[in-house]
View 1 (cartoon, rainbow, N blue to C red):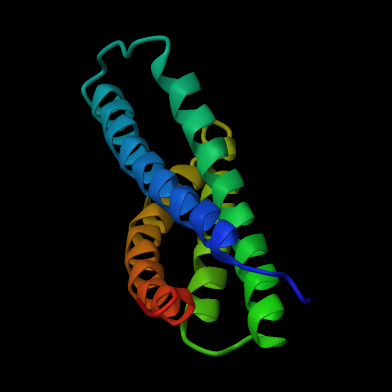
View 2: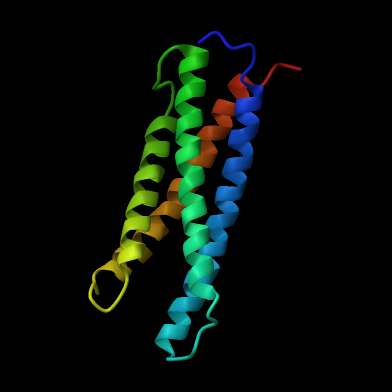
Length: 147
């Protein structure tokens, strides 16, 4: 691709990553709240589960958007992929988000296996986000104009 500048693309990516991290933190808080309420047999607010599901859907959408931005931006800038550990880290995060989403939607009395998979996946997802942040920071430094 012969685009004039990728700065607009990286701005979208930066905002998407920031909002994804905020969503991850909100999901951790609301998920812990739901788990605690369930464990102590307390009533949880009616809005909590729909908010958790909507936030998770939003985060999954942003992560898929980030994958698209990364592929398009890297192909447009370099002409090929695989210049750092950011690609495998990003693909791992996408896979973890999809497993989390799929298992989260299965949680219920008929699927007792889904909750531990969902929780375990989200623990690894936190480490994945940290890895993507660190590898992504080095990538961003390559694209920023030298001032």
